[in-house]
Length: 190
Length: 213
Image 1 (cartoon, rainbow over the protein chains, first blue to last red):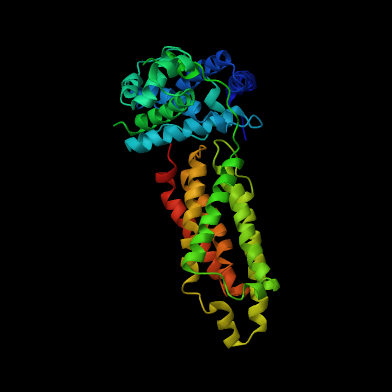
Image 2: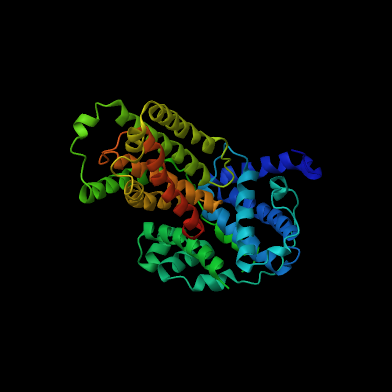
């Protein structure tokens, strides 16, 4: 298969992002944060190129893919290229969006260009139209409170358990299920 | 929420995560669902009364091996389709091998038989119900494999649904072997295969609805 022109940056990016992600999966939250930041920029550039007719959708989709990557991160196998894994998720969510909007004619490019998914970087975040925080408010308490306390306010699981009267494992389950429920709400939003 | 805030939220206290290649999930699904299917078979159809004699016949084991091979390949395909970016490779092509083997045995049988025996070998006594009973026995297993897939991240939903259906159909056919009185290769190569293909088709149709995430 012919390589795209910008492929000279690809092995580096793949290696660096994979390293950050692997450390994140091993429990290094700092590395994981760096991975998601870098991934967000790459996704923005990738999706902006593919949603030229729908610029308003780009930032929403960047967020949606980031949440999907986070929720499904246990399915990544370090033996495989990170690029292929990320591309499969980004393409899946992109096609899902286009299908939901029934606006496939706006597609300007082939989607089968796995190598491009991490090629370019775009730091200028646009305004997301959808507010994830508002959707978060719609979740049931047992999911919303653990996310607000642990993930937004940075409290410990034990502290959150004390404040909510939930067990520590219920707090962890609440975070996990809450983020999945959030992804579902994002999808089903008009 | 700004994207940077979202990233901070996702990364905060994210902790370590065990990679999941789906092996344990599918194993658990099958360990629970196949006995459910067997119970369904016992409750509605019953064991073949001649089973003790059947297990000494090579034809019986040909049949078991055929559906077991389909189930095993179906499992490989289903696991590959359950994770983003995993290539399918030649795994689906391997499905052709057990089918061709059984068809070859069936052809050999049919050639040596006379016309009446051919009809008997192809239709047996139960052709009209066999595919539907296999499909029925695959229902609990389909629920299990769908559950396993939903815990992973399939991105080709129709194919993934079809693979879940194929695995369930073949495992359901394996259970059905304990009831079924038929032994001939022509019967197995057509009606069993049809029984496996019914849940495969249903899986393809429902894949997008059941597996979306």
